[in-house]
Image (cartoon, rainbow, N blue to C red):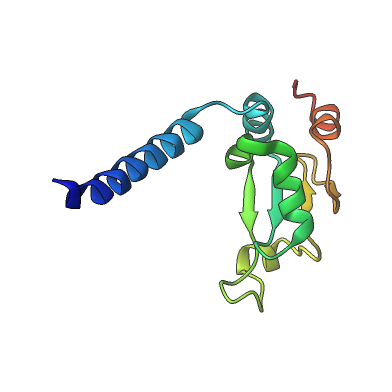
Length: 121
């Protein structure tokens, strides 16, 4: 029985880690309603996985970043731009595009995005 204790300990740790991940991913974020409103208003957030400013933009939304209207522009190898972003003529990251066609090539705070779109925080 003693020889199985380390295995039981590892199994319990794995179960706890998985339970924590499920809880974290299902718990609402502070900006969920704002991120959903941005999507409903036709806002687009163009970015690239390797872009530090895009990571900063996502971090401002915390757990709610999963709901942002994000469009990945980079090819998987990070050396090119996907056609969707070429067609949209995206030149830098992050780029926010609003329903009126205007663009803001910058990291924007949740407050700035709410003010710009009429969404509430």
